[in-house]
Every structure is written in C-alpha cells, then in structure tokens.
Length: 82
Image 1 (cartoon, helix red, strand yellow):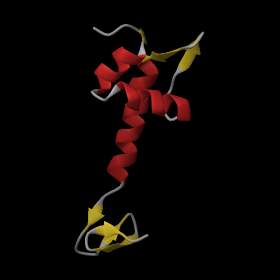
Image 2 (cartoon, one colour; image 1 turned 180 degrees about the vertical axis):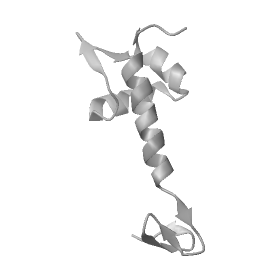
Image 3 (cartoon, rainbow, N blue to C red; image 1 turned 45 degrees about the vertical axis):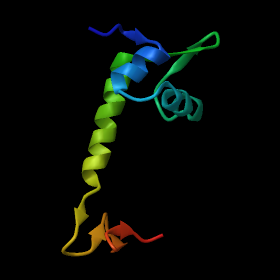
Image 4 (tube, one colour; image 1 turned 135 degrees about the vertical axis):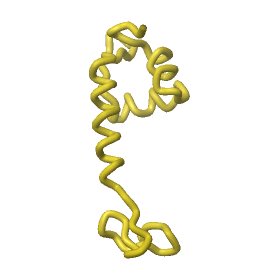
C-alpha cells in the first residue's frame, strides 16, 4: 500500500521512472505536486487522477494507416509531418 502523500523517490518508483524525470516534471508544473520547504510532495489521489487523464488523452490519439492520418494530421512515412 502506498502512503497518501509521497516523496520524489516514492513517486518515481510508483510510476517506474527515473527520479530526474519526476524533478523535471515537477519543476515544469507538468505533474500535480506541492512543496514543503524545499522538498516536493505528491498526493497519490491526484497522481492517480493525472494518470487517468493522460491515459484518456493518449487513447484519443490513434493512428489510421489506411487514411494516412494521425489525429487528423497527415502522416509522412508513418510519422507526423512537422
């Protein structure tokens, strides 16, 4: 069982990513977190909700190779054109 409030190390382990990734996401405000003094903290409930939102967003991005489209964007050799 994971605690309700998690540290950088705990959240990195929970999400199976490097600690540096969590620091980067936190500093950019791309992951729900807050600071106590100089240390980052994460509410597990908010992280789980953030994961669900990311999952929904990723499910919306689907490739249709027959139409050569990725979310309505033309593909070039299977990749999005810039």
